[in-house]
Image 1 (cartoon, rainbow, N blue to C red):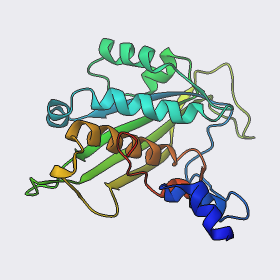
Image 2 (cartoon, rainbow, N blue to C red):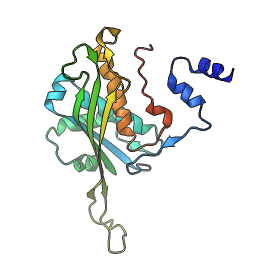
Image 3 (cartoon, rainbow, N blue to C red):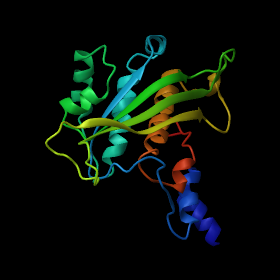
Image 4 (tube, rainbow, N blue to C red):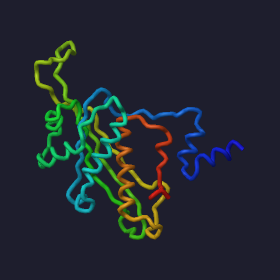
Length: 220
């Protein structure tokens, strides 16, 4: 009877059932450095071929990732639109610490999309998303003396504090047929959301249930 009640409460979403079956809500710690009490600027980029196929992908990824970080009230982020304007004004940027200095941020997170596709090569009749993002973080801080104390009258220096990759497959359970009624644009938006979520988990903790991918589209 209890299981039946849980199934009724959960509906069709397995993540909800997973939640109710837990005696507490476990969380998975982030492998990356803590960004709490830091001001963070997020820079996202992708190669020309990827942007030609998916215009605005870099901007959308940066915006969604930034939104995820903001859910942690102890992390301050630079507004995504201001960052987009900065990137437009610095089209050839190569040193991410420039953005950190211009926005007076403590940390800059760089998301470099190395792969993003909504269909597997050779599979024209199914939607199958894959992505690979190079994630780096750099912190600006004053140099320290022999005792480890910050020398605040000297200019802050950039230091690499994180370097990793996030590879994503969506849906994990298998590809979606093109005749299922799911449009490629809708699928791309969902894939991007999953990629942004998984990238943000490198810096913020998340619950066990978040691992279960939501494969509903348009509320179905």
